[in-house]
Image 1 (cartoon, helix red, strand yellow):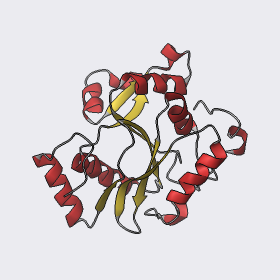
Image 2 (cartoon, helix red, strand yellow):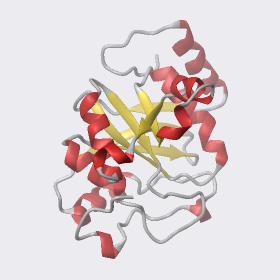
Image 3 (tube, helix red, strand yellow):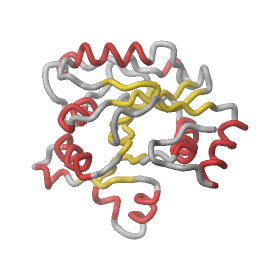
Image 4 (cartoon, one colour):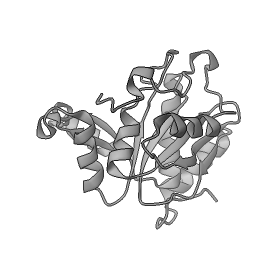
Length: 206
């Protein structure tokens, strides 16, 4: 049986999603969450094909999965679709234009949440990860769920957790350890899990 988010029971949809993953050769992974809220750092994100295992995973495990999008995208009729897919509107103006603070307010508002963020910021290779996700988790006091798109082992899911301490270099080292044997669909596009040096000393509010 596929692992389920705590407090959930299997449904017809979750069983069908689990069966589909099995037929496609994918194994869902869910390390036991330390609490009801997680900022999920999803990596390596190297291909548009990552989308479908992600959707199946959320359905199979009944994850309270959400993603962020600007508030303007949530007006009808598009807003109905965005919310159905798990979108959460971010209104930067209510946080004085500060993106991280706006997201922290959302995390604090929800009773349970798996907030999916792709810290590479692109499907092409870069030198560093964006650090917004890190400061969202740090300021909200929630763990980072290291969520692997592991095409090499055909596994997808949350493989471990890092509780941000404010020592970003040490915390990123833990993330790198968890992702050490994980390979994306296009390995040459993987961005190594290092914070940009200029951002390591303070929040990146992007």
